[in-house]
Length: 110
Image (tube, rainbow, N blue to C red):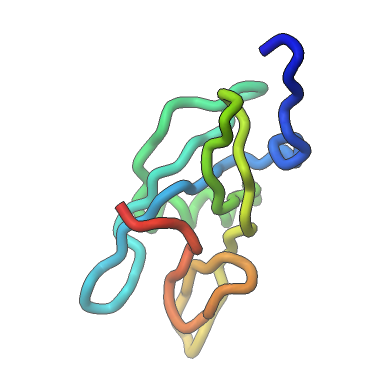
């Protein structure tokens, strides 16, 4: 958009921005995540990623962030980087600075 600059956060070159999540009620594992994926210089439409698909993107070295769409189309406010780690032999997905007891992406529920 002419006259408006994309935020520095969007220039971090995030590959995936997760905006909402749904967790398994019994054990708190991620079921689905609503996310936007970078398609070259632009962002694609919102996609639904299951736990395995999100984990594959992280393992491929893609930069996955928790965030929210900004007012300027194609711009995002990035909150935390999302990563995977092992805890007591279990693989958990979590946003930086969040509890590593179980999956916690630090985004709203849908």
